[in-house]
Amino acid sequence: MNIANNINTKKEDVEKYLIKEGSFETTKEYSIIVDFKEESITGACFRNGFLDYLIDTKKCIELLENLIKYHTPKRDFSYILKKYTL
Image (tube, rainbow, N blue to C red; front, side, top):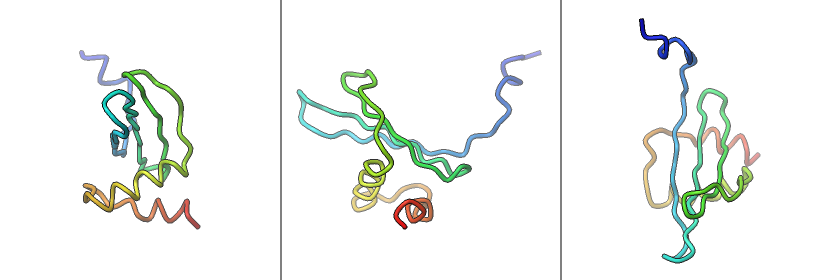
């Protein structure tokens, strides 16, 4: 019996976006998670592979809107963005 399969039975419905910003020496990596089940957006900033700080929802939305200008996301999350921008 594989016990590990029984530990986390909640199905997650999220997409994770990794966005790099800056130059070679001062690169920031933003990790933004769009949770479709909870209809929430959260994010964090990493430097040199380590967590630097959590970013607020406003910054997450700004980064996602910029991402949408240049790339097509796999799933539409515009209704979640509208929820925060009202």
